[in-house]
Image (cartoon, rainbow over all chains, first blue to last red):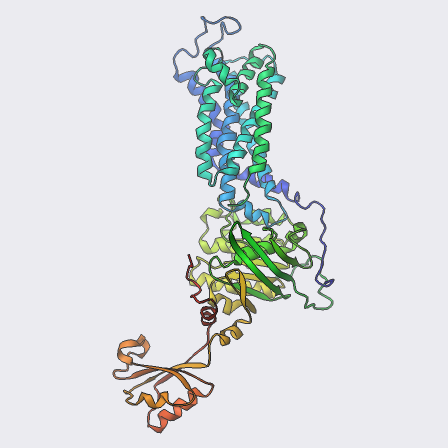
Length: 266
Length: 340
C-alpha cells in the first residue's frame, strides 16, 4: 500500500485559514442589514427613542432618594442599553446564524474540509461579539453626548458585568442555534426569550422603578441580574456578588448544555 | 477546456503508475436506529477512474460516500482513502479528498471568488482559485453573491470548492440534479476534464445516462448492498438477453407468424405503423412496425426472410442496450422512481 499512501503535514490542520474565515464572517455580518440594525444600532435607537418620545424622560427625578435624586429617567437607561445589546446579539442573531448554517449545509460542507465546523462557530461568535461591543459602545457614546448621562462610577465592574451578560446571552443563543432545526425557528425561539429578558432587565421599569417582587425574581434571570449589577456599577451601589454569581452560573451551565446538545447535522 | 496542471501534494505515483486502489471500502455497514442505511457494501476505486455509485433514493449511496469522507462513523467494515482510514484518522483524508455534497449551500451573501479564496485558505497546497474560476466558466460571476447564482452556477461553484484543495480524490454527489439539459452536458464535460487532470472521481448518481456517459465503472447499490459492478456497457449488455431492433415496413405484413417461427427470434411485436409509432414513422400510411428481439443472428435472419417475400424494410433501428434496462432488471424499478 506504500505507493498510494501519503502522510500530509498534520500541523495546523483545523486552524489553517481561521483568520480568513473570521474576515469572511465579518464581511457577511456587515452585508446583512438586519445585523447592522439590531446588533449595532438598536440599543442606540432605543435609547434615543425613549429619551425623546416618552414625556418626562429628561426631567430631573424628584421623588426618589439618593443616588437617583437629580438624575433623569433617561439616565437610568444608559446601563440598561448595554444589557439590551448583549441580549440582542445573543438571542436573535447568534441563534439564527448557527441554526441557519446547519440548515443550509454550511456546517456540513465545512466538515469535509480541513477547517472544522467549530471554526465557523467560533468565527461567527467572535464577529457577533465585536458587533455587540460596538453596539454597546455606541449607545454609551450617544447617551453621553446627547443626554449628558453620567458614565459608570465603577467602570471595571461595568465591564465585568457586560462580559458576563454577553457570555450568558451568547450561551443561550448557541443552545437555541444548536437545537432549532431551522434559522427561522431559532429566530422565533430567540424572540420568545428576548422580550421577557428585556422585561426582567427593566426596560419598562428601569432601575429603582421596578417593583420589589419582580426585582426579586429578576435577580435570578441572567439579564435581570445583569441589569441590576450594571446599575450597581453605574451608580456606585456596592458589589453585586449575587448577581455576578447568577450570571456566571447561567453562562457556564447553559454553555455546557449547548456544547453537549449542539447538532452539527440536519 | 484548459487545465493547468498544478503541483500536487506528495505524489508517490509519478515514478511508477500504481494500480493500488485509491479508495477501498470493505464490508461497510451503517444503521440509524432500526433503519439499515448500508447493509454490506464493498468496492474499490482505482487511480484515475470515474466510479459511479448508482441506486435509488434511499439505497444507501450517500451514507456510503459520507463514510468514505469520514463524515459518518460506520457500524462495521473498513474504509481506506489513499491508505488512510477516514473513520479513525479523518484529518489527513480531508486534505486529499474533495467533497461536493448535495444540499450544501453557502452563506447567501458570500461571493464566488471570496468563497473560493476562503476555502483555498483551509488547505496546505490549494489550487489557484482564479484557475478554477476559469475552468468552471465563472469569470463573469466572480463577484456575484451565492444567492444570486443560477442552479447551474451554484453547482459549478460547488464543484470548484470540492477541487480547490487540490484533491487526489473527489466525491461528487448528485451533481446534475436540478440542472437543465444544457447545464448537465456542460457539467459532464467538466467532470471529464477534471478526471483528465488526474483526479480520481467517485460519482454518486441516480441518472443512468449520466453514469453511462461518464463512468469507467459503476456499482449498483440496492437496499444497502452492491448488486452489480462493472463497466456501464458491460452491465447494460448483461441486462438484456440478445439483440433488439425495430423496423418499419411500408406495406402491411400479412404473415408475421412466419418471422416468429424463425429459430433466432425470441420475441416479436408488430403494430400498425399509422397508429402507434412515433412521428418519424408516421409518413407511412399503411405500414407495419416490428420490434424484434432474438439471438446474435436475428437481424440478418429477419431481413433475409423478408427479402425472400420481396419486402424491403423502410427503416431499421437497432436498440442499444441501456444501463437503465440493466438497472431495472437488477433492482426491479426504474432508476428515478422513489421507493417511498
